Length: 238
Picture 1 (cartoon, rainbow, N blue to C red):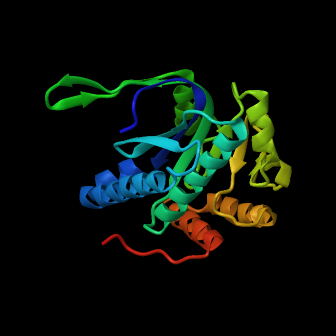
Picture 2 (cartoon, rainbow, N blue to C red; picture 1 turned 180 degrees about the vertical axis):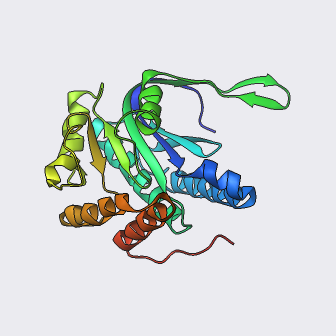
């Protein structure tokens, strides 16, 4: 587990889409998927420790919190997005989709042992809160596979580097009937599933088409669109 931290930084909140439904349907399958999420998260973070600044993470239940301690805004953004890309792509091979939100602000946690056999890790700060609210509360509701950057409280220097990234865009700029531009001043979306930014519009055309499916098939269609975008076949969890 990372050592204690207190400061202002980028914070990403990521969680497994549909996990509560998995628990109700088959707790053993849900456990296997959660275990895969932890393994991929930790393996991805460990593999990037040679990069500076490196990304650190805390994982609990079906959620993960990623953050960067130091470094220039551009390096922080590049390394955080690379980790998010790797985790999402690897977890997709297990037929799991995540939602990921990124925010900036104060972030604080400390490892506090309150009993010999119990460890508590309090997490505080506007950065974490905004990342959580972005994923779980704010409109529009995030869909499986999406990674969204909230512009709320994001310093101009960070905003500039996100906007200069060809894979981070305002969805309304695609001018698709299936996407409203109402929230364009609130968010950027990161397209981790693509290797060429020229494919963003085509991807969104297929992805938002899945919105019309009934709930039972919508999730499967979104999974297929993401798989096709990444161009690999999935494998079952052993």
